[in-house]
Length: 77
Image 1 (tube, rainbow, N blue to C red):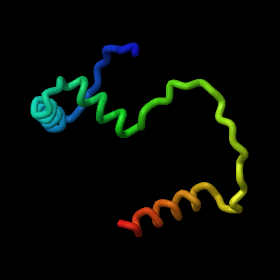
Image 2: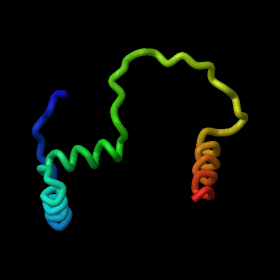
Image 3: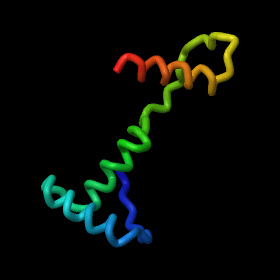
Image 4: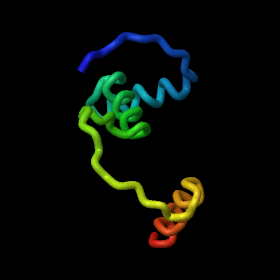
């Protein structure tokens, strides 16, 4: 995996907390930040294979379907 070096501006209190948490977990700040970003974005798929599926028409708009699925998942907790 290729790594890049970058600069960002971040609130000092957040940076302090990030450093403290990284130390607690025995990681360096870069590792923890990358872990947080991967969790936020999800793992980036490395496969370039085409997906083989047939789309289905549920008669719903995607946003409505997602909202219903989310509500259903929340009601189970």
